[in-house]
Image (cartoon, rainbow over all chains, first blue to last red; front, top):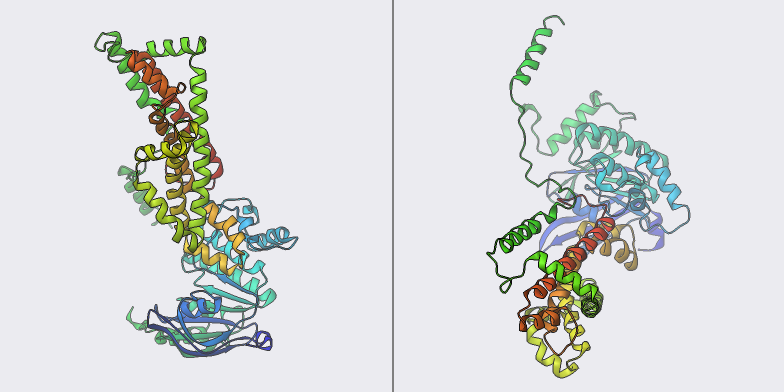
Length: 241
Length: 280
């Protein structure tokens, strides 16, 4: 990869990954333009998380073929908030930041995600939603060029999840990093993403644009049409209930 | 709205008619301060009672009150404190060296592959060999003076400190390691912010074992060529049948054990205030 490629968007060329001989990701070739919000949908075991973790530079002991390039500044948002329980919330945000003023920026980011009063709290005292807000603040504080989010709202209750969707969208709108969001939730993908990829057996089976304007409403007929089509792609028979 | 009202009332009645279902607590409630001493106090009371009623001869076992009186007399005439000081010096220098060495070895072995290859097997071998079995050899190497005693306490203390701290370092949450990697932490930052705080609970467990272990090792060692120490006092008292002095020695060990444990617990509660777990 030349430095020129790093200026360019996220790209993968024939990317494959296998764990103990079992292929999880098969020959994925993909380009994502700067600032695009991509949702990765797929059934369990389809390779969504593996793709995300490959781009994050994790699982580097796995067998790998092909190549990929990502911008230098990547943030990862995990499903579990992964706050260190022995550091107050604000110190979790500034972990690994070495520049002056990181603390002030962290406080501003906590205010932006709505838990400005929790800066000095132990992570163990936060609710699930507050923890995930703190984790989101930690990711965005680093002003990433690429945000990799692995089912970040999967463990939250439905109401908190709706609030987090709005929050994530609002914060991402400000600086427009490229976002790759792994999710099981078709509605979440349709509410947030510009583009939806469906993974099946480790390859990209479908590539949809979402032409709906923001703010999106689940009641919009186009939304419903895309929803049914995606659920069909994921093997969900919607007329059973 | 009108026909809703009776239904809501009946729901309320239905709820209040039934006794509230209480869930089992499953974990014990937090103890009030000092109640940990209840068990020892009951034993003391029974013991004192048995002595006063003549069930226990002073030649078999002195009454606690007699032992306390003897202890106070020994403090007053200056015969106890020099022995206590001598024992404490041995126990705590061995403890200090053992904790430092155990910690350093655990870090070297828990954080580096080379360290684990070289050190872990050695400590496991040391763990399998009883301290008593080392005494003859260590006497040949270091003589029968203070060095030998401190060295043997040091080797005894080292083992639990190493085992618990090493296990805690190895048990670090892989999720936290991945987080540290994605945040771009340096190795030094990782050790300082993630590995060490994560291993701290395990280290405190080992410290609580170590503060009592250093005293228990000492009694045996004070049988060997010494004119000072609590262990020496107790053995001399055995030769003269003075059970009250033996009991004084036992009381001192018990008091030191409880006190040391309380000190470590207090430090632990401050250092691990982020943790909310059973009984802590």
